[in-house]
Length: 368
Length: 241
Image (tube, rainbow over all chains, first blue to last red; front, side):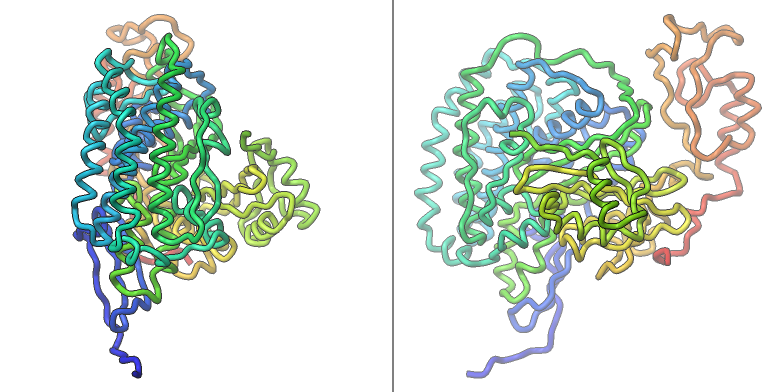
C-alpha cells in the first residue's frame, strides 16, 4: 500500500486546551496525522516577574515565587530564599532547614501526584487515577493549610528560615499520611504499571537519548528518565539533604513511560526523606532574624534546587540596594521544552499530547 | 559530595592558553570574554576534557548601563563542577554570537534574552520574540525601560521605619533643616524641575513625611516631559541589526 500524502496543514492546540496544562499553545504542522513541524507559542501567562522584582525588596519578592510554579510553591520559595541567603551569607537554624526539607518533599509528592495523574489522563486513562492521586494531594494541602494558612500559594519560606513553626495538630496528620503513603503508591503502581492504555500510549514514545538530554539542558525527571543519575539534592546538597538516605531512580530507555515511573519512584523516596526528617527533627528556632529591608553586599549568586519539575535556579545580582539589581529564574519547565519539537516531529498528533504530558510543564513557570 | 565552583581566574588561564587576548576580566566568581569570541570559547569549555562543561545551566543578560553582560552558568555533570562565563557587548549595538549550536539548551533562553533584554544573537536559527508579541515597544528588562512616562521612576527609598545611613534615631521630619532620608541614585539623570526642589527638601516620592509640594510638582512635570527614551521609540518589531 502506498502512503497517502495530504498537503501540510496547521493545527493549533491551545491556548485553552485540557492537554496543554495551562495557557500554552502548540502549533503543529501535519502531513495527514504525522507531525512535520511543531512550534510553541508562549507568553499567555507572562507577568514580567523579573522586572517587577527589581523594584521590590528581597522579602517582598517571595510571593512571586509562589505564583511561578503554582503547583509547587514551597520549592519555589525555597530556591529563592536559598539564593538570597547565599548572596547575603545568612545562616538558617537547624529546625528551619528540617522544616524546609519536609515541606519541599511534601510539595514534591503533591506535584508528582498532579503530574502523574494528568499524564495518565492525557494517555487516555480518563480521570480515575487522577482522582486517586488527588485524594493524597488533598491531605498534603491540608497540612500546608494547618501550617501557613494557604494551600497553593503558600509564601511559607522566609529569608533565614520559615515563617511559622508547625502547629501541634500537624504531627499526627503527617505521621498518619506518611504511614499510609507507601501503600497508596503501591496502589498506583498496581493500577497503572500493567495498564495497557498507558503502556501502548507511552512505551517507546518520545525517546530522549542521554547525550541529547544533557546538550538540551534537560533536568529533573526528564534527565533521569534518560538514564542520567543527576539530582541536585545528591550532587550539590542544600539544606540538610546530605543527612538523609535516599536513592535516585533512573529510567533506561528515556521514553515517556520511563519519566512516569521515575516520578512514581521519586514519590517513594520523598516519603523516605520525610520519615527520616521527622525522626531527626530538632527543636529550637525556625528562623534567624533578618532585616526586612535587607541590603546584601554587591555581588552575584546562583543557587539551585531540585524542584519537582527539575533544576530550579535563581541568579541574583545585588548592587547593594534594598532591591535586587537583576532577578533571574532558571525555570525547569521552560528549558525542558527545548526538546519538545525534536521529540514530537515524525510522530502522530496524539503522541505529541503524551510527550507534552510527560514533560510535566507548568505554564506559570514557563512564562513567569 | 558538593559541586566544586572553578575559580574564574583558573578558567581564564586555560582560555588564554588556547586563545590569547580573549579574556577581558577574570575574578574568583567568573571570567569575562568579548562577545565576538564567545562561541569558540564555549566550544573549548565544552570539549576540554578537564573542564567538560557539557551542561548549560542557565543563560541570562544583565544591563550594566554602559554595557551588557550575557552570563552563562556552565557545569559538568560527570565531574560535578561549575563555572560562570560572561560575554560582554556594547550597549548601543548589543550583538552576541549564538551558542545554540554548542548547547541546544541555549536555543529558548537566547530567544528569551532577545525578547526581554534586546540583545541580538547572531547565528541563532530562529531569533524572534518569545513571551511578548511582535511589535511590542522596547525590551522591558533594560534599565532604561521604565514605568513612568519620560523614562523615570522614583525607585526604592530608604524605608520610613528604617534609619538613614549613619544615623541612630529617626530624623525629625517636621524641621525643614533636620536630617532627611537620603535620595536614591538615579539611573538617567535629574528629573526636569526636580533638582531645585531637592536642594530645598532632599525628599523624594515614597518617603512618608519627606518630600515637599515642590517635589510633587516636579514629578508632575515629568509626565509631560517631551523627551522619550530610545527604547520606547524603537520601531515596531525590528530586531537590532
